[in-house]
Image (cartoon, rainbow, N blue to C red; front, side, top):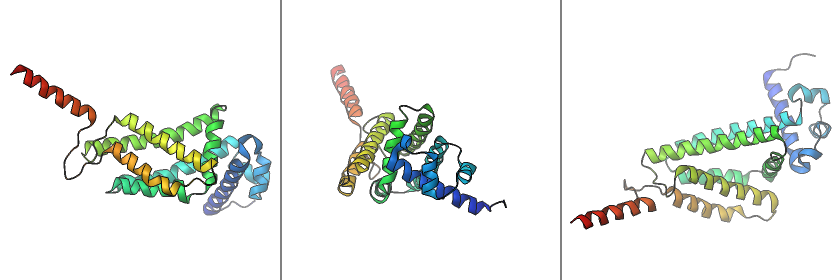
Length: 223
């Protein structure tokens, strides 16, 4: 068999991943077999196993593809002068424009991760990658004086993840989920927690206000 050109190999690999995504989203991890994916992709088992030797390998391929796409979008987000506007654009892609099968796949893999250590390693690895990127970005924005978060960065990232997970879940489960009306409210919520700094003035967090009042009271008591 002649060796395929790299571009052809990449195209075939992507074609198989697209077929696997549809199968996993529609049938779940356990109901989907390698034969199911072969039929969906219209390839022979031999052709499939050239690229992926197991369902776990297919999951890893799908997650790695999603991570690479996220990294590209995140780079644009990190470089944007208006963080919240750029965050809204990313939200529109993931929660409005992107097909629901991606959300169903994420929910399915999250559930499977509770039972399958290999899937957990893959799934949680992507979760950590995304969280670490947002944590690093929030800390950089804070160090640059562009935000004055109303809570500590780690808690902020946790809240961010919980809100995102909830939006993924609702769009995956509910056919009439209206993310277009919800997204602006979510961005406002995230914005209130990030507390962007305007006109060079840093707004104090509630904790900082308490410390400031305590210092004033202490000075008054010493007079």
